Length: 110
Ligand code: HEC
Image (cartoon, rainbow, N blue to C red; front, side):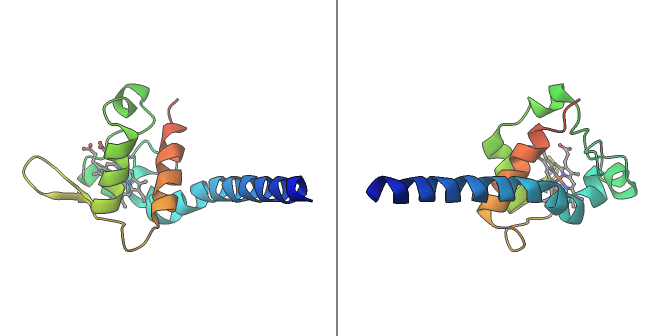
């Protein structure tokens, strides 16, 4: 009986992880693609204006850690002059959603 309930909760966790992952492209399309583009390359009007860098470039992805990316999305991203580049998403997205998006960004590299 006991081992059955452990199995059931493991199955439950796995389903949740898969569901969160499947949501990432959707969350990306709704919140991030306006600047970064559907593919992450940043070839949008807003992306060009703000000089969004190419998130499909594996070399650029290496310039920041998962923690830095998490912080940039949660708290916003300013350039060296203190100008807002990306607004904070802390009021729109949960920590889990942001973590899933950071993992998703890692898959955009070509
Ligand atoms: C208003 C336009 C805009 C939106 C919307 C936006 N970003 Fe950004 N993002 C930028 C710009 C501009 C940069 C800065 C690029 C640079 O110069 O490094 C950036 C940087 C980043 C970085 C790199 C951070 C670093 O440390 O270099 C990540 C990762 C990122 N964005 C993810 C996201 C995710 C995930 C979303 C959706 C939740 C999102 N962005 C929404 C414009 C935007």
